[in-house]
Length: 146
Image (tube, rainbow, N blue to C red; front, top):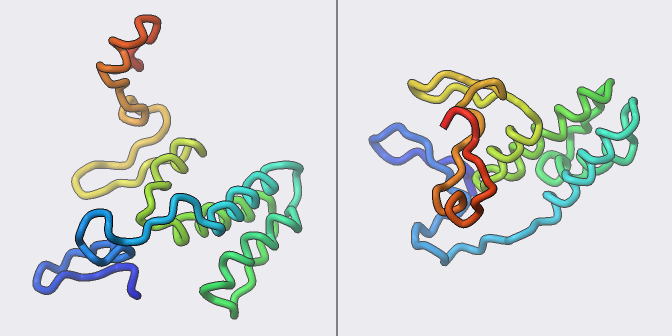
């Protein structure tokens, strides 16, 4: 199954991971084993200072399911973390993880269409707290900039 589908005549790409088009009929797992393995790999990679052998084995196990001819071999801890985050982007495409990964790691949101890229210092980075939450909890204050 192709992950991206180009609709005839429009030239636009859509995620075709859940292809039926009817709500709630595609199998959508709540938790997948590759997600667990990549979570553990990232936790292992962020501990210590070098390249974690266990983290490297985990990210390669996930990657080699789709491409057994490639073995990732990052040279530094930072390269290993980048490889794990890239693998998360590939493996979890269309499953709603990207926004939380970007904010969790303090990365920049990429430019899209007419909206330019922005980073953690931007007021656009943190969303406003909904009014229903503010009404429910009188001790809560709105995020700065809203």
